[in-house]
Each structure stands twice: as structure tokens, then as C-alpha cells.
Image (cartoon, rainbow, N blue to C red; front, top):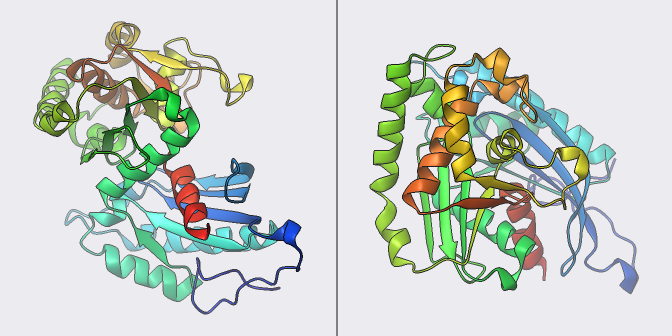
Length: 334
């Protein structure tokens, strides 16, 4: 089987492509996204100047943040499972006809003292080079995806993304934001560090709310100086789940159905979420069993972000970091 381009490994040759002007610039791209909760493979058909069209998706609930030792190191089990899944992604990408495969990691490995060693081991076993994204880079690339989705008519955008390990905030009127901020307030991290128990104790919920709000308030100045925003956007699975719980359209209505998260409605729902067990939350519309434990933390972070930034509603964007990675890659191809 022919190899893929150097987005994966320098040892793999560039895939042969037929000649002819109709083929120029068109390709099937793959992105491996190693997050704190899940590892995704997204395959899209794309060419510069056109909307990337999803061809297939594949994921596992790896939860790297749960494979961490008391010293903050990624445990061998987590490293081995990551390497095995990357190898699996490589085979699936080849089966799907992917011509260029890239991969990236976010906070779970970025913050681990042995993150570099884990990535080296993955490369040795699979040939795949996984790039480390900074929190600011995550914010910028997610902002790019939202800008392309909503277009220039949206004016100055503020984009909020809640991942498993971090909260990203970005604002600006161009494709590169004027401000890009990353905070250690991901839904998985807040759950693990501040909301023990199922459900957590009321005093733990109050303390989590206080600490989350204090952390966000400490980083508001750059966003306040960025000026007035015209449009506020939320991205990520957590935001989509919260919006669905608060009455947004189900996924069955497609990616183009308008969806919003209203702060007032979310604030009303939070007390009920706080007294539910994870199993009970999993019974809510749009909430998967794998995400149900983190839903309360995500709601606390989302509501605090909206309140402190004076946002009444977030419009949910179906594109986020993975799409931003693909769009940036296409820009460089151009």
C-alpha cells in the first residue's frame, strides 16, 4: 500500500496523484486529535477555497487524564493505549484513502512531565509525529474554525471552548484573534479536582463555583480591552450537550440547525444537575454516558464564563479545533 505524506512521518513517501488540472488541490485529509477525554480520527474531503466535507469519524474514550500517576506522569497503560489507537487510526486512514494525516495533542500530554517521552514512544511504535499545541494555539485554531463557519458578517467574535483539560477564550474581528486565552478549567479537570462524589456534596459544588469564577475573573482584562463583541460563540461537545439539555435542537436535525445556549436557562438547570448522579444525567437528551460525569463541571464553567463576560447567549458552532487544524493546513497548501 502506498504511504501518506509527511504529515505523519518523514519516512513515508508522498502519495502518488494523477495528473490533470481537475485534481490539483483536492485531497482527503485526516486529523488525529488526542484530547483529555477522547482520541478522534476525523477524515475530510477538502481543497483550498471549499468547505471541508466530513468523510468518516472514529474515536475512543481514552481519558488520558485518568491515566496519570500521583507525580503527574502519564502511566504506561495510558501511553500503550494511545500508541495502539494511533496505529489503528493509521490503518483506518489508509483504508479510507487519506493522502495527508496529521496529529496533535492538547493539555493532557502538554502538561505531563513525561509528555515528550510519551510522544517519542508513540513515534517509535507507529511512525506518527503528534504535534503539541499550546493553549493559545488551541484558542486561535478554534477561533479560525468559528470565523470560517459564521463568516465576516458576524463581526467581532468571542469564542468559548470547553475541553476536557482547559477552557479556551478568544476574541477578534479577523481570522486570527486579537486575544487568545487558555485556562485550566476543562470539564474533566474541574470534575476530577473539585467535584468528587456522585453526585458531589453541595459544599463542594459551591467551592468549585467560587474557584472557577475567581480563575476566569483573573483573566478578564485582555478580553475587556479587546473591545465590544458582536457575536458570542460556543464550541465543543460539552457546549453542545449543555445546549441540548437546555432545549436546543437534537443532533438528528443536522449540523446546520441553529443551536444556542441561553445563560438564564443554564443557570436554572444547574441546581438540578448538581443533585443528579452521572447515571441520571446520562438519561438527559444529548448527554452520553461517557460525558455525564463531567456535565455539571462543564455547566459551572460555561455559566461562569457567560456571566462574567456579560453574555446572554452563545450560538453553538459545529466546527472547533479539528476543523481549525484542517483549515490552517489548507491555507498553507494555497
